[in-house]
Image (tube, rainbow over all chains, first blue to last red; front, side):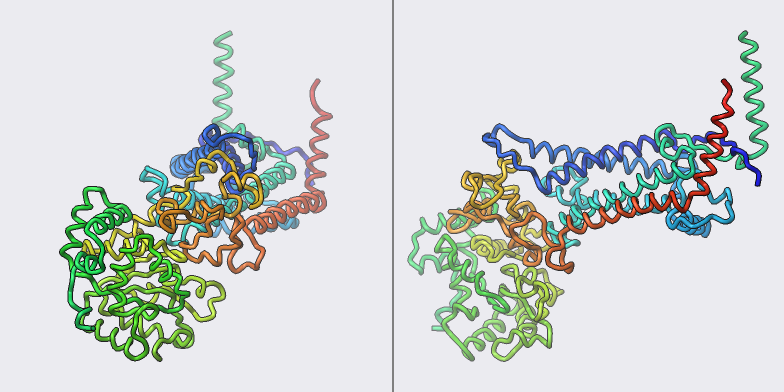
Length: 253
Length: 374
């Protein structure tokens, strides 16, 4: 067995738009979960104040609604970026519609979820962007986000003056009234929290086992990819760029 | 007797015959205009139509119900309301209040339906059982399903009074042993005005009947078939305790100081935020009060399936079909806990099963560390 440290190259995987989307989601989801639980079960301060002089619960709801709109706008932006972004941001990653997707899902299930031995060690099994299973889970979560947004908008439709939330009011009779609508909205919150736990754990897992910058990639945008996976002609191009740089350096000197 | 009653008189004439003055009549018209959500300028038109329009025959069917809606209806705060409508109703058919009984009552109904075919208002109170060929509710030897189909055929308008006929009510609550269904599950080819509530507010019921009588058309309905002017807003959005809600001042228990002070009942399971009704604006018993005003949280009696969305004094309802104590939070905690525990187990297992890879990475990394240039 040839033992040598594999060479890695830095690849720009997550564009700024993707990272912006990710952290905006983190922020708004956190705020929404916290304010959501406060709205569901508000703490009683029972300050001896007249209601005229206090509006904190109203502000909590205001924050919840404001961040809900941020989340929705963010989601719409990401859907746009699924068509405009680079190959790792593309929508094709997220829906397992080819045999290749399913093969990768099976591989990830075997090797990463059930921790079985990877006998072949094929480089192509290691995903550069999302692995197919993770990408599919983001697609499922997107559907949950959409449902959560629709139920939320439907609930405020009656007290809203804007056509946008009103456009979703039809979901209320479909679900059987405000009570089940509110209930589903509440229940979904737990799915998001569960998703966050699993998602963060698996990021840490991949970073720990693969050691190629999984966790930090959402900050810098870069991941490390084995040098063998690049085109040879590409090396030549890089050399040329480097040569040029050296030449420029000399010229400046 | 029958001849006299069937003489077609106007609303106004019938009111005068009852011994009310014109002043009473005008007051009544103003009340009703306000209840129906009409502009003040419409009062004149209302008066005029009541002076000229013929009364409309009403047939009131009772199925699986407690007669609470009728009870609420006859306790309508303005005596004229009940008088006007009840005169019309008792003429034709309502087995609770009419003088006739037995075969005579059924005969009177058949005759009225034949004479007024396509003109009468059909009021339905109570749900309709469908299981076992509908034997769980029979009147005069016929099942409710049979009766509703017959009386709906010639109805100009169908009004479903109360949560039972609008949604199914308590008899449709889980496990629904008689297969009770609301009116719109049986009658599909006609618009059904739902006037839910357990019972509905009396003035809402009379308001809907009068609206049809006045304008010859059904009031504007929302997507669930409820008249918008009465069910357009949540109780929460017209509640006089709303400022306490926005200020985050909540009563934690019924015997607390906060409850006495009239703080918001949100944490005591008030369904005001999810219930569409006019309680907050119209009130009950001559506008004297409504549940929240009396210190009792709204139970959402005008909402679909409110019986199964209990317990009433909890903010979060149980999940239907998931056992008695399964709330969303309990399910969520189990799912989240399982995910966290799964992650922890997986993390430990990773160190065991991925030992070769981890060791190799570590070994190579250490080797590189040793070979660093100074």
